Every structure is written in structure tokens, then in C-alpha cells.
Image 1 (cartoon, rainbow, N blue to C red):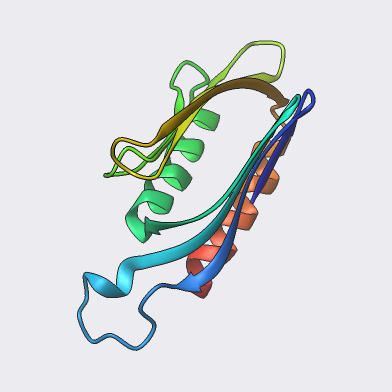
Image 2 (image 1 turned 120 degrees about the vertical axis):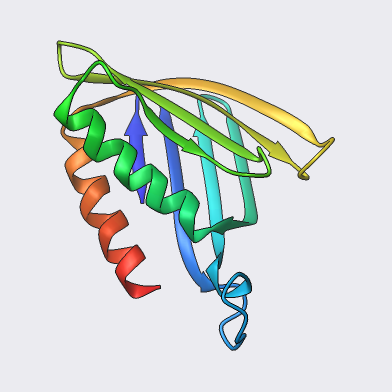
Length: 135
């Protein structure tokens, strides 16, 4: 799942379930993610775990925003390790702002902003839907 903007990229690669053999329903919802944030002159590359519900909320948020451009898109996590907010403007651009904290808790915080074209959201939805179905 990738957003490409002006000299910037936000990419999440789903590596699979964190606990594929667990019988515990809660533990089975954790997903291994490779997160790459490329900004003009900076690169953040790490391996994190997200809760499946975080990706479901992100998917639903995109759908809602595409129906009503005044509603922002959000990707948030319970641990506040990753935050992404997208605002759609009337010219077909999406303005993204966010942060990434590593390690979770008191780690370093990378704040960033970039913009993409609205058309990328359709591709992102398709990718998210496929990933969620495969989990």
C-alpha cells in the first residue's frame, strides 16, 4: 500500500500475521508491517505491528472521505506510533500530514507533510481491501 507524492512516499508492506498459529482472537489480529516513509532527504524504514482494526478503520475512513470531501482520512494506531491525516481539496489533491514514533512510547518522532493526487485513493482502497481479505 503506497502513497506517492511530491518527493515523498508513504508505504506499508503487509508481511503477514504476527501470531499466525494463535488460538487467541485478540492475538490473531496483530499484523507485521514494513513501514517506509521517504521524504525529501530523509528515510524512515522500520518493522512494526498494527492491529487489523487499524487498517479496517483506515479503509472505512477513505471510503467516507470519498463520499464527502469535507471529512478527513485518518490512519491511527492505539499505540500512537503511526498517525496519518489526509485532507481532500476541491482541485483533486490530498494533503497528508502525519508522524511516526520509533520506538513506541518515548522514541524519536518524525513529523511530515506531503501531497498526492486524489486518484491514488482508488488504488489504495483496492490494495487495502485485498490485504484485509488475505488476513
